[in-house]
Image (cartoon, helix red, strand yellow):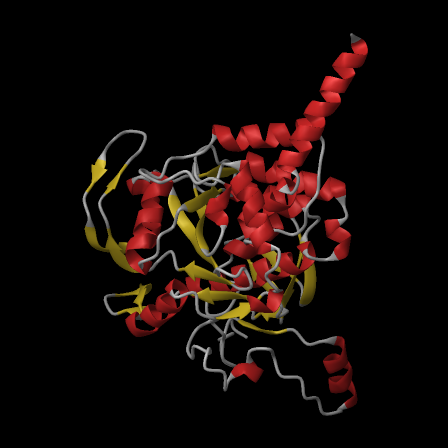
Length: 406
């Protein structure tokens, strides 16, 4: 009897592992958009993580819940970072409502060779569609011109998805919501993320103090860097987006390093931290879906993963807000819709970030020797896939945030 029980237990563990193999790599990717490697972990641990995801999943309305085959081809995911999320504590002053302050649209090409990651400014003034709160049933009328970050308060995650779909013309079947606390946990779980600044930064509003050069940020310091508005660039929300893209790029480079991929405790901590700190749409909470996403995403090279800001211009009625740059935004979203390549020109980094010098360049500068090391985007200026005027960087580019006032 005992032998039969042991055999049954081994069979159950083996079956669970075969189903869940690769999930650990996928969970962090829900933050940074990419899966990193396939690993098998203890059957109980994976079951526990999956159960957490399933408990907190949210309906997006009449969304289809796809099977494994739905991940074939191109797909879109919306990642939403919540300010003043439900249950959030000790992260600034409490507000009456929750705001969707970080809105990141991820498009993976049909051949799974490219990814375009579009950051939409929280202060982007746009039309909002009618939304219904899935919990209360309250109906919110359509609006003609309001900031994007008010969408969550009109119907939760599903309303943010509807608003971004209305703006971009894309179908977005997958979505996830992150809190400040989740960002802190995941930065700790990975052992910190290297970020670079061109000069020392002291931003008391965000609680950020950094020395010049590269610093590995963890926990609340990582969150402070991501939230800092008055410490980088020109002090605008667009500068903060540039910092977020630099952070995500650095995290992707770290997560695709051989040391991280072979570190089982780190991968498990990442998976567990993500499961505790994320709310998924029902369509994304299916483990088979996440595993298939991981398979699709792992073939994307870092130099073909492009982080861009949604094109915008200053709102003529409010200098603290922005409005869509309609011509460039339409071209960008048409490219995404058509699954076409998108490349950046030599001026894509703008005023908020700059390329980090390599060791060879630093040595050449110290000795006065000339260097010739154009950035990946600079060499692509004659490429017909280049969209002039877009702001952003690739995941392969190592960049430094420009301190405010530099």
